[in-house]
Amino acid sequence: MSKKEAILQAATWHFANKGFKDTSMSDLSKITGAAEGTIFYHFKNKETLFLAVLETVKLKI
Image (tube, rainbow, N blue to C red):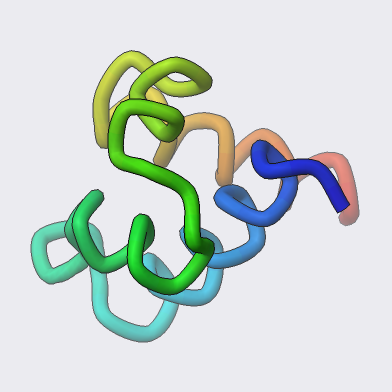
């Protein structure tokens, strides 16, 4: 699994269980082992990451 996929997977769980407001990029960094800079390399900001999660979930339906 690539870092980007790991970030998406962790973000999907956190957004679903903790909500957008209570999900931090720092938490995702700790869970995935990816530096925060790596997360921001793949996703411009938390909103962009959230939209990527929604798109990923939509494609699975």
